[in-house]
Amino acid sequence: MVHAEGETLEKAISLAKKINNKLYVCHVSLKKEIETIKKAKNNEMQITCEVTPHHLFLTEEDVKRLGSYGMMKPPLARKEDQKALWQGIADGTIDTIGSDHAPHTKEEKQGEKPMYGVPGLETTLPLMLTAVSDGRLTIERLIELCSTNPRKIFGLPEQKDTFIEVDQTERYTLDPSRLFTKCGWTPFAGMKVTGKVKKVILRGQLAYDGQNILGPYGQILKGA
Image (cartoon, rainbow, N blue to C red; front, top):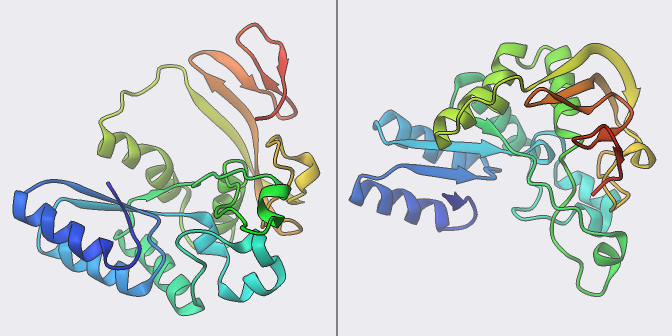
């Protein structure tokens, strides 16, 4: 596994090829990275990669309004790069979607040396369901990116009686005050989305009822 930034990607691919090993690339954000990975795949390398929602839905232009709240690694890129990421989803170059959840507090983001990263766990699926609603990908492809492929890549066992229910038609606005994360903010505040998580069942137990996160005995839990 390697973080896709700077010269790291080329070096990692070269090393993986030399020792004939698998390689998983995190946080792909640039057109040239997608092209490099696609070339490696065409050369039958065992390489897979991930992209984050903030790189799919935000660009360097958004940093102007977000300020330190738009600081992350790798940084937000150009619209040209963003377009290449969506093309990578369409043609199968990209294998997974990762939230890269980094719930730094407002104090940490507003300090003299702001922390890099943004919260993304709760907004990932609404954003991607919106992309489905907009016709940018199918619900089947989204399931591959968020569930089927990660399980295959990392050899994860299928969890019995574990699933989520979503309403693909519900429209609403992302509101930081309605999120469970304790950091209390999101770079997607005010964005209109289509698609909402209504229920989460974890190993046969109700973990989220559409309003509350629930513990193993049904008690309501606070955000984290």
